[in-house]
Image (cartoon, rainbow, N blue to C red):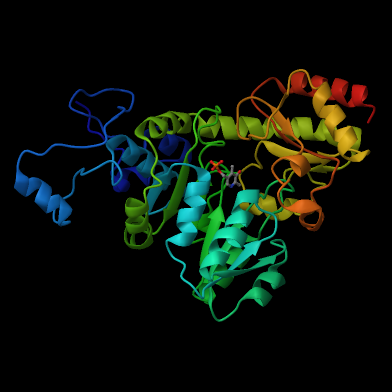
Length: 402
Ligand SMILES: *Cc1c(COP(=O)(O)O)cnc(C)c1O
């Protein structure tokens, strides 16, 4: 039988990104199956009592319990780590489980976090409603403003936390600068890379310490399961995150891990094709309504920075129609092909109104600060023929009278 090479870093490190997405992490059972096996088991058995004792003592490797490890989950973790160029990865039950674990595993009362203003709503909620209760304070900055990051540092600052591109304004953070600044001050930078994934952007190459994901989005890519992941150094993952995770339990089910593992095999294709489609549809919308936010468009204020950090700019863009919420609702209601959905990263094109959905909780003032306008529509471009999506948007904009 051909040697299984998926976990041998001396081999996988030589592979190009598309190959890693298909092959890294694969370990085969004695049957030599082609497709990764689904180990739907919570526990394990042992030949002798001494075997299990050695594993619990940390003197021998091997499975103990699926809250700690699982063979299918381990394959996914190795594949994601390899794609990100990380020493190690742990996966979680959802993207929010990943964000919460990444923060809580390393913060204590009295610590301080600096976070970018443009962020997924629940990430902001954790800072204000969970960490605050335990005496962990934070400062919110405009992530695009390098000087603001520097000015927000306090003697007790432990973490920089941001996403790039950010939801839904697609703001870009200058990772080389901001992560470098963090390093210089002994601060850990955590980058939420859900919008891009390792296929389009690898934050560790720009000096990030920790990369966190909602794998629910582009990584699964077909709208099936919730999942999250965290990449970092072996030391941080093994000694800081893992003990927190195995005792608190926000682990990913082996079934969901298997679905994401298979999703990753087409990630490179999907992420690049959907990015191309988004550019094509984005150019049409720009010609029609003017105000489009997509890092891949030359009109985007941070276009050059985005192109320095990203291989392609992803499937998501936002645009603003005249006439506020009423006009945005009219456009969404008139769509015939594109679905109204707050999900992203799917192969199906999906559109939503951030002000009344994903960013509803932050209130009018918070939205105004973030640039989430009432007439804003966010759209995820899928794998349909982009000409059909353009035709649908054209008829919807026409019927909505914008
Ligand atoms: C969706 C999303 C999350 C949360 O992920 P879930 O899998 O829904 O828990 C976090 N950050 C970003 C940028 C997201 O898009």
